[in-house]
Length: 261
Image (cartoon, rainbow, N blue to C red; front, side):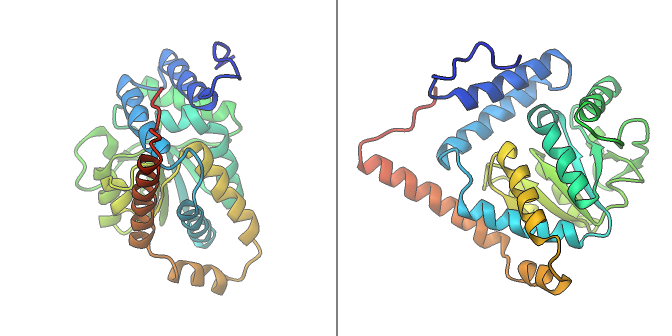
């Protein structure tokens, strides 16, 4: 079982279990070494926000839920890290909003794409796009990450991306897609380019979006549209940065340092 080497008494138990999941997924060929590096960067930002879902992330998750409920053809894009950390939550959210699930990879091999799809199916996905049907191309992306399914991302009006690269988010926006990003780094190009950026750990953000989906499911369209009109991604990212700055200042004044172990 993943995490069996980590005693529950360890102060960083939950963080270490996530690392174990990623290492196990790397052994299975689902995660690439570069993905392990990316997780370390995100983990650093998670420390900075206190490893908890903050109010700015909740507000973004609520807006994301409203946008997904209003979408005509939503798609959840999944890479190796997202599959390793939150495959079941991806499937549950997709079911809740009627979204398609599509594999999309920066470091793509057909074998890896199939393994990620298999993991998603093990967690209840009935259909996974982006493997054998990745025949479409996002204009402006020459890399394999530009390969998408004509029945998925290429057709979507709303795309949820987690742990993504900024180039693809920018490219999706250029072709008229509305993008929801889950990204712990409020300074990343992904976070800044998306319509809605949830600055939170993906393992917390996906259930938080789903919680808001259940709350808003029976809300009239006008209420959902009002939530989006009242949402500003720039304000949310600014609030995330101010939160980090305030927290670091308070810790420094108390003589407390954040431990990275």
